[in-house]
Length: 103
Image 1 (cartoon, one colour):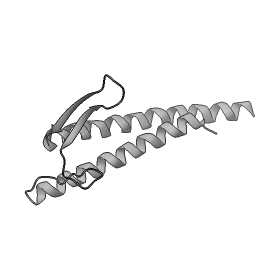
Image 2: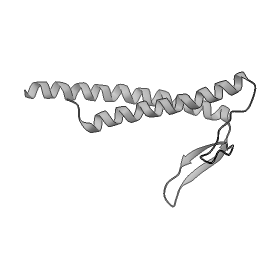
Image 3: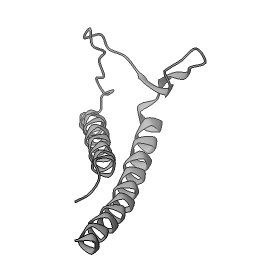
Image 4: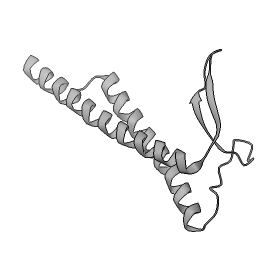
């Protein structure tokens, strides 16, 4: 059996990939229709993309990041999360092997 922490980290990475993929789909659809992507906030207002560390007093954000630049970052983020999943799958295999050895 793998640890809860390992399982959570794998699940979190999968969630990040899903969210990033949805953003890329929105961008691709808009580009196909030769329009700007339609990103909206929780109140339904159109907004640009942001990049930042949004917590704490010393938060840092870039506002209105272009969707073309964001797409590059999103693809890199997906690649990073896929590598993370691969690494944590190896951790999970080690945890499983350790449990088998204990029994």
